Length: 122
Image (tube, one colour):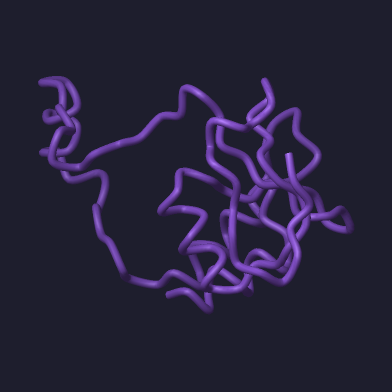
């Protein structure tokens, strides 16, 4: 694990520790976030702590073109109880994700700094 500086780099994901931590520090600039996600790395930390960058192995990756929707889920979707959209109101979505109550959890991983950085990416 390395401590990041102003330089926009990450170590190879194979160097992550057993918990998936690959680096600490740095910032949430758009360039760093794009590089991180393109490298299979994501930030996850609590407000007031340094940014911790993760790349767990294995990591779940969902490829939309490979998504298989079960017959029962297709039936649920056909009933029209849900509306599926994308790119509709990111600021509201991330605000709701940040503030929604989570049973048996004290809060969310979406810090104020993260919220601003992801909105800037939009």
